[in-house]
Length: 476
Image (cartoon, rainbow, N blue to C red):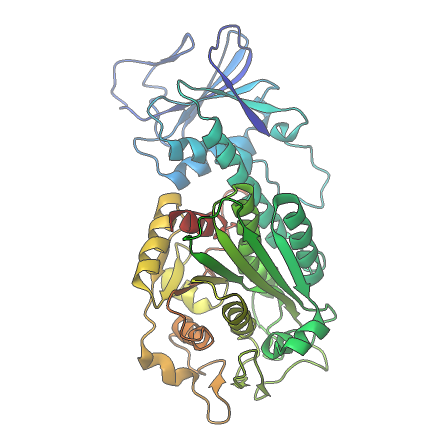
């Protein structure tokens, strides 16, 4: 889907998408546009309402967006129209951009329309969405030039759609090698460099914690390193480091999961968010420098699987006592963080992971759990998330929780053994491997990366983190 600006609706035929801000149910004046009048008793712009009128060889789709819609609400409204009312779209489809729409609101509407083309039925025979037909261009009727805003909205939705596809793909498709190949090919297409370390290269470099998690799988672990440097990067721009958990399927290891294992293809959602963010950052050509690592492996069970009570090594030289093999995500992140910080020295570091059920127990499915040793980062991440509807909320990293990861036999242990403060002790474990970095943040996205909504019957991906990371980096 591309866009084109139009300056008149004279002689226009096709589908008109007309967003309407809410007025009042008792308002005496009708909604009028393009010679079509809709009585207020029938339609007055109330959020999530739609009214269709056929007139002048046009399908007029009046879309209620409420009084003061936020970014996420607008995106969802237009994704719903795009996904669930495909039959109304003609070869000629135009979006009317209200004069009082902000750039962010315009971006959200167009991004939502594109995101509505995503279909979870990857292995079904489905008809292509009208917006994806060759040569289709969404026409934009606006009093001001919104081409740049529209282009950005489409790029955001494209990166999110790719992330949705990665997370929703079954684990026999989205293997570690698949993610590595995706990163390599996408880097060539959009403009970032990719290096992939296989099992032997990881062993030579001492990525022992990462390798331990993947020992029981037939799929070779892939340590994916991506680097993007804009040609227009300001020398004063901060170097940002990203790490995303890439467990392509999580059985729990020998501490095998006893419930909801069917959803564990989603355990690479943090890694997928980092992959999608790299596509978006490069596609937008942001004037920044970003180094991203996705340690990708499968946590499976066989005779080679690591054991509870094992003591394993790690990239930074620390030893780790394994209390629970199902606390595996923090192990691969430990090596990812250590490797990133030691070899690339980013000034700002953010990691994302579907790490703990504790984060879900705390916040439900409303926001991610945020941990950071840097108040400015907390403020900027929460602000970026609030702007686009990908919310997070901080939890403490107090040293009072440090004894929960102390081990008698090794330098540190991977689980406290206590059924409490799980998200916090996991974050304390990661903090141990950040080498006292002064600007690090951890996002536990277990409750927001995969779930239920109106766009599919089964649980599915949300692409949380793709836009958040990009927005945060834009605002630095």
